[in-house]
Length: 489
Ligand code: AHR
Image (cartoon, rainbow, N blue to C red; front, side, top):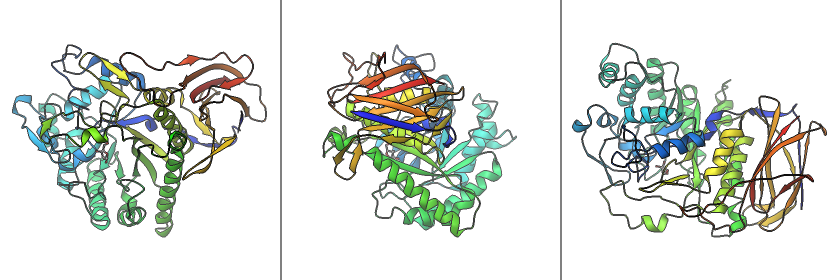
């Protein structure tokens, strides 16, 4: 099989914001307790943070982590998680019907994020709480004033403000399962007033308004326009969430689901721009794709979780190789939309639908870990408009699907990176890369991640390993592979 790529420096899509490699760490399941924070485990440091997890998160190169949720935030009292640990109350978490010990809270998260070489994207509770609480939290985090909450932070040992820049105004507020769910009109008004108040406290912040919880809700589209009609001028991003479901239509359909992500982004951009036009605004809203992943492997197990446990095993999906290729193609899709998608959070980071799965004695880097790590490492600079020529196959929902999925990045030093998925399960692909009308390119590396078994899962005993390919006779992509190829002009 033959595939061809064409791109030209003269036609960039946009500059890549490193924050598209962000993630989510929610208080649920074993994400925090037993994942990030495990004070009784010999693998943890003196703060109780798992050292092996910190190392793996550093390797993933995650620039920003959304915290503390997710659904959890919508009934959370952040004040319960600050100050002396012995005085912190144990509470019920309504979102996941679990017990929250509050032994890990905001200050622990900020310390952990620093150790992991990351930063925070903070979510405020607009479910059971509102403007005042959001402002108190912002004061605690960002203000240098001689006032109650800023002084509380100092008392808790943090003299300097954290200066958290990006703030999520609630979570999935359209969703019937959300604690404190609201109508679009109610939510839009609340966001507008909350964003105004927060900006008057700290004009440096940027805010994210909740878009629909997924593209299948009956009110998708109406929700975006009605909410934005209320708050357009006071917000900077709209959120998008998307989880890929059980592959009931087979592998070839599953690995093409990134086409859904592409269509979804185009729809939300169109909705934002329609509101922009009606408001005669000069401002374009950007997208924070702040939850995305495959989520189905754990569904059956999770039906039997008993309520009111502390850190139960929940949403512990064990990913297979076809998931890794779908994640690779989704990353390619995000890279192709960098003109509007400035933030994307892979959901989640540790144990809960995550690339990192911990046990008592170590951790597993799941199959999906590797494309995420590669894009965070090599996906910097500008995305070039990339024309892909490829043989196709037919898939339900998507029609003709290219076997080759790919994008070309021009890095800051004038080098090029090609990310490519060969979706064929059986055939290799000869790849021809034409940049700037056949400019001479020197291939400097080709890393390939492939597996002949779509259902292969990494375990403590065996993992798919990456290979360095020597392309002596032109570039060859192995069947069913994720590839990173770099060139020097
Ligand atoms: O990531 C798991 C959950 O999925 C989040 O809490 C919620 O925002 C979404 O529905």
